[in-house]
Length: 93
Image 1 (tube, rainbow, N blue to C red):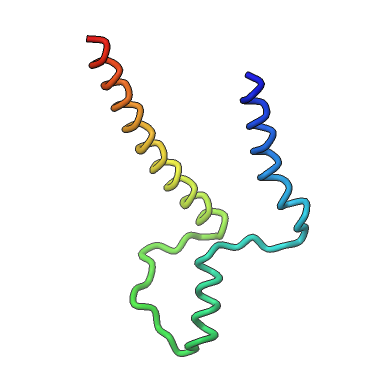
Image 2: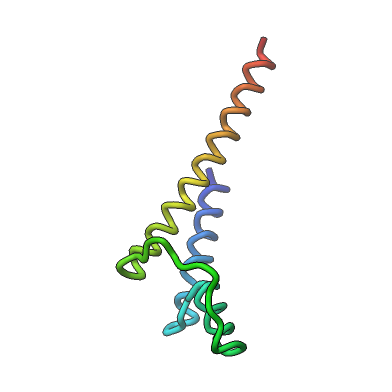
């Protein structure tokens, strides 16, 4: 139990400290940084493909990205749990 509390405190520190130490910093994603870098190198660059659906705002885009990651993690951990349970059941018989 004590180990879990320490790990939770460290997790909170890792999440909160960058926000405190870098107040006013812009925490943008790699996509936006890559786009600005490409326009600096080749201003006349045309993308090969355009998005099918453009989210109404950055918040919705972030929400969809988070939901996608959460769904992927849920599938991975479900599969891991399923095989762990199967292995445990096979070991009991």
